[in-house]
Length: 364
Image (cartoon, rainbow, N blue to C red):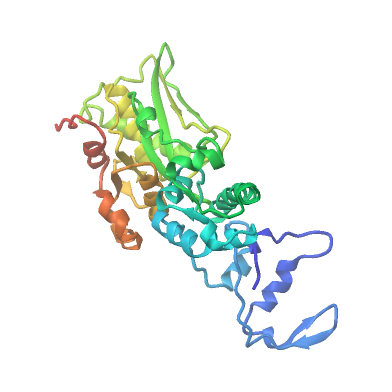
């Protein structure tokens, strides 16, 4: 088991990746010689399992010797079952409690998952359960000393703030999209999917500049410029003035400016935010979208659909617009996600706008 392979780095002691090239190569690892002991080892019958959080830092030659298996994040139901079967019994035991002393309801677990943790796995979920178990252990100890018995403490959804404090994650979709010029997009991160709110506004008295802020990478900046170019080329068909940039500047901002962002999948979201601001129409709060946009308005497929859909569901999104070529990726989604959300395939930007904006896009 080779854990955290993406943390391997070159130092003055040597390059571990160079030795791993020979170790992981089945054509030559039958006579691998360790340079410390100077003893040959036959590693041809050894099964190596490596783990990494990201593949970008792995050496390409080393990555070529591996079969990459992507593990997706857990859904809310999966986290609930993992907590019920493994995390709660382990934390109860580690904090000196008996299993009958603590009862955490499903509503409490769902609230911890949605309002106190934002992750693809369950590491922070277990920490929060451990925090609850510690406070329960203290209450059980005080009650036992006073009353002579150990009563069962039931932790329900309403009592979670008493143990973990105020919620750290707020459902802010309706608040953020209440004004024109804001569209809800979804992004893939190393910790799973997340929701982005992209804002666009037209500034009078400008010189036709496009201002992009929010620590956007080069690919994301190019997506924004491509979206603007398509909107300018199809202005009449989209119901706006072709000269909307004359004597105006266009400012596109992605909040959470301290976090770098990149990738082409926000193209349709940027275009929708711009059109929402130009037409002075707020985007529907229950709609989120993803997809790369071309100069001709086509919506190209993107990656991470499963993680993005799970993130949208956590935020209460009910309509998820995705590229039509990504429809096969929906087979990876849990059944409960497919039941609770409506997935709309889009081939062009006009297909996205039909779902996102309240009034239909005029047809010329």
